[in-house]
Image (cartoon, rainbow, N blue to C red):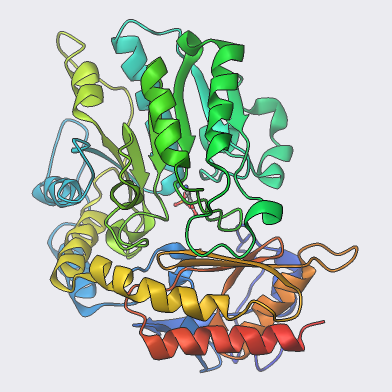
Length: 444
Ligand SMILES: Cc1ncc(COP(=O)(O)O)c(C=O)c1O
């Protein structure tokens, strides 16, 4: 470990088996963060790092906001934990009510989880329970999408479409799952600004899967409105509308996984409002409480909630839940976060900044190795030509180079992903992309 990477030689890195990390590589040359405020991290060696990714697409209001810190502290002092199984405490109800102020349509029933992965598995279970309550228990099949990311639960990886996340567990995935094709085509839509004009017809693949499996066996379709983790895939114009129409035609539930698109990322509370397409179930996590404590949620429509909750004579209606569903500290953070979003009108701010962000990221077109630039709201992706025989290595080098120069970006494969906190300003957007341009030029 070099002095530059850590000034604390006593820190033992061996016990923590790090998630989604090349552990051996990382522990040779760790990148350690120590503090965060607003748009910046401070690294362990005291450098300021501009956060181009809102942590992991989650710190939408910026880091360590005073109001959220105060709410977490106050809640930890007042009541650390209380059960929500056959018990309750006000802050969990308040959090659900505040979340429901922003969810689309009549998706006003909020089931609380601790993560996006749990929210996804919860939504899949709700879909099955709904059909069973409606006397259609044979609807057990899920349709996901290639390159979809829905977390790491067995449900999530089954409907997800990222090969390395599935390979080692392939024998144990959910049995009744099929996948739509993904919508990215560099051939037809490279360097599109906003939604690509090409690709709405790919929604018709759902018709093919309905013909193959029969609609009566299909419970739900789950998609990210904008796919993030597999490299920023922007839905073609008309695509989500078409999926919605086909789901309606065949009585198939539509689930939007809004774990990254939720809470202002596109300039509206949820992608559902941005696109004007309302799903039946919507998952969220991350920005729901600015990632100040683990929290996720599923928003369910009135029809789904009422069918399940009204579907039994008495007793527990839905055999599902987590010890920490509605955890007081996560819930307190959600209440303070949503108040902050409203007071500072951060979703409108994101909408206002989106054209500036778009112009800035598209200036990377023409830089060496850049084969696509794509964007929507405050989400951006830059795809690099993979290095011969070493896929992913070039983007990794850019990621490390940017970190060395004081800018945090994310990479997946050879795609750089950007999702800054919604409080970013124009100067910081310029700093972000001019640093990226410089590092790309310096990278082989
Ligand atoms: C769309 C989507 N769904 C689910 C998840 C999983 O969330 P978590 O890591 O909180 O389990 C993520 C995480 O990035 C995500 O982007």
